[in-house]
Image 1 (cartoon, helix red, strand yellow):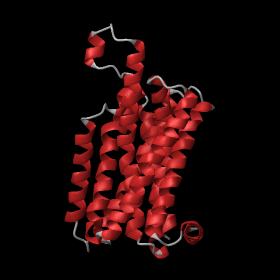
Image 2 (cartoon, rainbow, N blue to C red; image 1 turned 135 degrees about the vertical axis):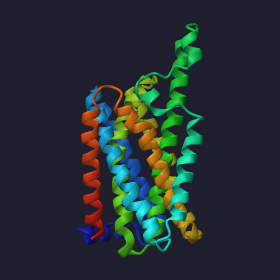
Image 3 (cartoon, rainbow, N blue to C red; image 1 turned 90 degrees about the vertical axis):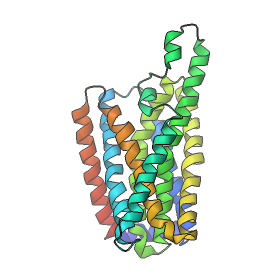
Image 4 (cartoon, one colour; image 1 turned 180 degrees about the vertical axis):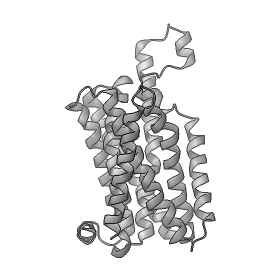
Length: 284
């Protein structure tokens, strides 16, 4: 399986890590758009279903952060020295923490609670202004939380260096992020509707936002590690730390707010199991 998948990808993307990262970015952005477009046919997904799907996404990303970024960063790219990768993990989490101050937490948007304290104390705000604010905050929040995903894909392909024998980890990471982008895309479609966007408009916005954020960051990640190779373990740790921050600070708390935490936990376990299997299958 691993050989066939790798050969097929190389036939499409070639052996340049930058082009591979570009193709990988397009794939994960397309899967994001597919998930976002599900709201056109699945018009009112239940909170139980969304929590289960988001739990699955968290499980996939949790496993991927370790198997495709942290462990390879320590064992393969820093000769067993954990310090560079772990510094990257800390910096990635810190960067997301500081950036999160500038935009609302994603769960405010997912639950529709996008009004600020000032808005809650002043009923004189116009409905149109409130909707516009919600849309802007929605786009900023989702853009922020997709940045580590595109970066991780680029770092993964940059680490492989275009060598087909090393592509297994990068491909499993790309597929993991793509898989979690599907339920995430659907969940943020619901958030977009809460923020005032209609379904058809959101499908277009999601496609543009995914393309603008994930694709260039995938290319940037590959270029960075290919140009400055000693940065590789730091970059892998940074991408992993940012992803882990989003999982712990946003996704898991969101799935435990509506009384469906058991379903969300089962979804998370399923995501971890599938990602571990995928990683072993593609690495073999």
